[in-house]
Length: 340
Ligand code: NAD
Ligand code: DAU
Picture 1: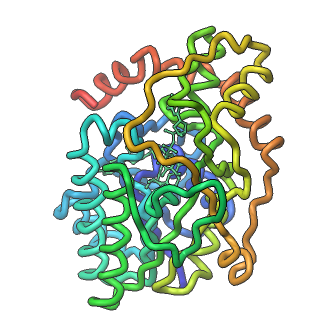
Picture 2 (picture 1 turned 90 degrees about the vertical axis):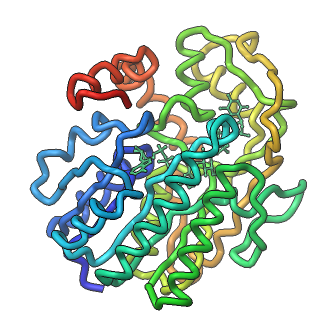
């Protein structure tokens, strides 16, 4: 693939902003167009350091807006699409599933249709290990594991995966899918487990643990995920799914205790609360396909990744402070004249 123009959606979010920073750093001649609706989770502060890059172009808008999406495809002649844009938080999907279907399903279909109409060399759908459902105490998810989502969020992501597959099989659109485990790192919205733990503990606030705290997640540093996406974008085989994991399973309670210990905070901040409905017990990814076929593997040890993440939250209180105080919402209202 000769890549001159890349559409990235959801680039103002956690993984998207990390991806854009890494990508622009290593591909100096490629135009990168970031289409983001700037929902509560989108934050242009996360991209301040790239906004003067002449190859970076930001458009605010909804991936479900077919006329806007069509206009961008027409104007930029994208060679490839990486679709990060999504509603991403499981708890919110339980409280209000509609927007998850609107963005994650209908939005993805809108992008697939535009890509079909205008033609692209590659359409990479960013998916999640959650589409596979929940594991017992042993075993790992492989690409051949049947999908069996349990939450409205994971059901919407599984639906998007099926659409991407269908557009490949039926219309010959060159789609690829990556499914990654839980990411952690800088710029993650402080509603997700790790940044919530850090930010709450730093303020001596309670750290909520759902259920018995024995759920397991397979944590990966966000830059390792971004490198895997770059690898699949350029070298992955069209029509394939690639699992991406950190080979780093941790019980939630152990993660919380480790964060408190690193911050020098007491375990009395831990509070067991009512479990998340339908809470998946354990995720673990078998990443051998991408490792063997494409030569990717995670570089950052959990020790290094956590040290870097905690340092970032300690040094960037302004970034998360504006979010939790509502100041960013006010700033946004002034900038754009409407509510987020
Ligand atoms: P995030 O919530 O931090 O960011 C999502 C971004 O998408 C935000 O910038 C938001 O404004 C934008 N967005 C939402 N709806 C939109 C719409 N209709 N049109 C345009 N933009 C819209 O999410 P994240 O954690 O960075 O996740 C990014 C992608 O990676 C998602 O597709 C998610 O399912 C997937 N994923 C996340 C993880 C993880 O651990 N965070 C793991 C595996 C896969
Ligand atoms: O596995 C990949 C997925 O990881 C992504 O697809 C999702 O977009 C992302 O949000 C994440 O989903 P999880 O539900 O696993 O992540 P979350 O950070 O919400 O929760 C991680 C674990 O911590 C989960 O077992 C629930 C638990 N938890 C979470 C919160 C917010 C708590 O015990 N207390 C909390 O306050």
